[in-house]
Image (cartoon, rainbow, N blue to C red; front, side, top):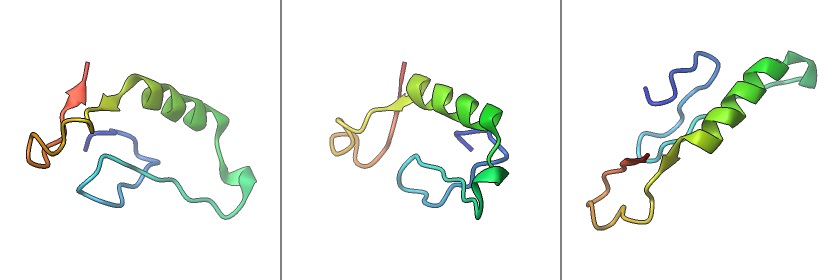
Length: 61
């Protein structure tokens, strides 16, 4: 798994995405949310060249 986060569930296999679902705002953990947002800023995927690579996503460094 690309996200390596127990609290995130990967919905699709085609795109690099993950989700967390809550029924109440009190279920959310502030520390989890901060960590996920920090990773989201740091980890970027090269969607620009997706067609050229025939659907294969590569992580930007």
